[in-house]
Amino acid sequence: MHDDIKFYRHQVEGVEKMIYMRSFLLGDEMGLGKTLQTLAVFCYDIIKSKSKKMIVVCPKSLKMNWLEEATKFTRIPTFVLAGSPTKRAEVLERFAEQYGAKILIINYEQVGPYLNQLNQLMFDIAVFDEAHYLKNPKSQRTRNAMRLWSTRTFMVTGSPMLNHVNELYVLLNRISPGEWGSQHKFTQRYCVYGGYEGKQIISAKNENELNSRLQAVMVRRKKEDVLDLPKVQYIQKLIELHPKQRKVYTEVLEDMKMTTGNNVEEIGNALTKFLRLKMICGTTAAVLESGEDHSYKLDIAADDARQLLDSGQKVIAFTQFRQVQEAYARRIRGHGVAETDYPIYILNGDVPAEPDGRDPKDPKKKWSRQELIHQWSRDPKPGIVIGMFQVAGVGLNMTAAHYGQFLDKLFVPALNQQAVDRMHRIGAGSVPVQIIEYLCSNTIESRVEKILASKKKVFGNVVEKSVWNSQLMNQLLEEEAEAA
Image 1: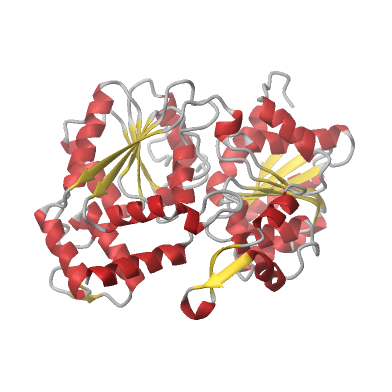
Image 2 (image 1 turned 90 degrees about the horizontal axis):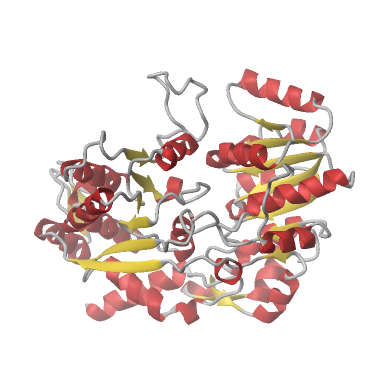
């Protein structure tokens, strides 16, 4: 590793524990430097002549982040499997010919097509970053990943369990094969079934036993326990629906249909209904064919953003809907914010996960996600990132901002927390992070907030507080039935 690397005490303690574990689950909360710890364990192995080759399997959007971190923290030659098929073949050839310690970075979708070639390289260590991507044992992604050979396995995720205890099974079985039995045996031992026909996992049991067993294979710390960071300040703003929003909202709520223009959409099930209601809470533009855009929520959020930008702040706004993102960007520009004064960065699936290789001065260059965030972070001027949870909520360091806006929220709190942790992490400094949550009163948004606030104990916890989607949906249906 480079000589000037500074470790936090919790990172030192984590590395000291993990170097003696054959395989492990590194489940530190996001923002605690899991990448550095992982690289440090590999460097220790290199010094002790235990390992030479490490493969990092991660979401495509994080490959460049891993390359940057590996370059920043170590002197180890690092290769990224990217580009055309010809270029990828060249990368694998150069990796195989590279003498000494080395790292190969690939994304989950590449494991299957290159599995035989990768296994021929016989990796000492396989790192699975954002390992909760492997929670479904039946998915092709998981099956391919489990067939990737390595002497040691490092499962790395800040959210080991998003919804249910059974999501731990694949991770634990890869770390210590055979010790956890079959998936059926695991779920029977640690999961409580209920809900429809008694076949839904609704909570956990034997938690003390599971926690005790986890201690042997897992390292997990929370920010509040190891970092002297100011607590995140949450500000909720309850906002009325625009009259035209309320009209469309009421139609969906009461009639299970939605008039979008010349067409009428029949709402077939509760999940679709709740999704449409959430979209309407964002803006009518999310559902109307005409694109007619009405939203008191976005009006107020845009005014807040303008004031923050005027005061010299950098801002991040999160949403799960593309139409809301587009409508919000229009409002920011319409609130007296010129991009020449305050750059507006749009972060969604259209932004490539990997750099296109063009010179930054090339007018045809399209920034990758990492490059976009670097540009926003390093620009001395204030600027706003309007990002999708699915893209901006993971793997990016956004500590340049101390203000975040949640234009809507996901049903799973752990995923909302991932977005917060983009800002509230090592490097955030001593200024508190403020998250402004915009909720429409007397709607699905405010109802979900109340349920989550009152039902945390019911939702259960093993690794951390976690929401059970099935219970949330059942509770919403029950309340709706009572209201009727």
